[in-house]
Length: 350
Ligand SMILES: *Cc1c(COP(=O)(O)O)cnc(C)c1O
Image (tube, rainbow, N blue to C red; front, side, top):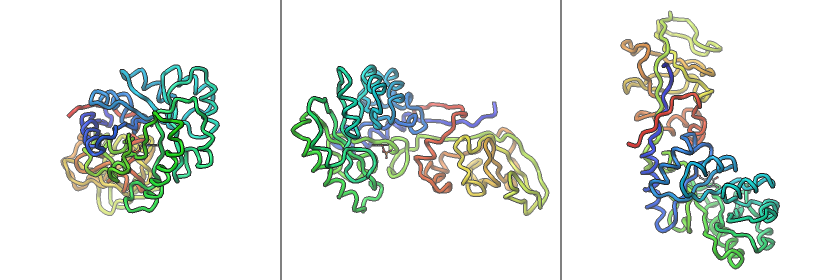
């Protein structure tokens, strides 16, 4: 079969979780597994993390939570986007999911759900995204079972950024306003970046995502994902001949062109056109021409020994997720979450 192979090392993800768990000290280390576990497979990653000792998981949507619930033994699952309507609230209740209530309307929806159970409150400490505003804190009603009071940092990947201390101060102050009404609640401010900012940011629970999957800002992470593809076809072209859509690359010399079976529909961002290096037998291999939907082209002129079926490394020992992200003008998160559905997925535990 001529298909790219995406290898996901759940053992490395567990090692990253353990290392972040050591860093976070006495705080609990929860895992963010939204967007299908950052493209790595939410079920496979979560099962491995659960076996390693992780007890609490965060996903974005109720649908993600429902499918994760049946895959794990006895997890705590928080829904970051909360409950938009009664249908969401009923689904959370039926599956034992804990919604993060982000504004007064969501609190009302949850409160209106007969038999409502544990939930989280999200506060906006300065990111101006989800969460209750300071003026709304006084109106949080009693009688809801809040287990977690959380907020999210806007600039945690820049340790020196003034927003970090600003949001920290706000979070402490806002959580204090709520303290008497939600005495059982744990406090949580940090994702991966916040966990790396140091102990002050850890509170009771940290919510690590990208660091588990081997991405910046957790530079000590073990890589989790590798991607390689067989060469689908090789052709020789004369000097002066154009390659691919728009003829955006033209051979300056007689050239040997390799065609690889993955494209922007598989997460090879189109911004990588004429602008990425892949590797064959550990040696650099320039991506040339436009990235198309299902194919990319490489210049094999310097690799006369390469044959159809030989493997080319896209992500692996020579190229990290963040290296490829830099070439594409994006971040590792976007490379991971756009990894394609068409790959043959292999899970290892090395
Ligand atoms: C995605 C997300 C996380 C995890 O973030 P990373 O930067 O991937 O560690 C934590 N908290 C919230 C609210 C999130 O949306």
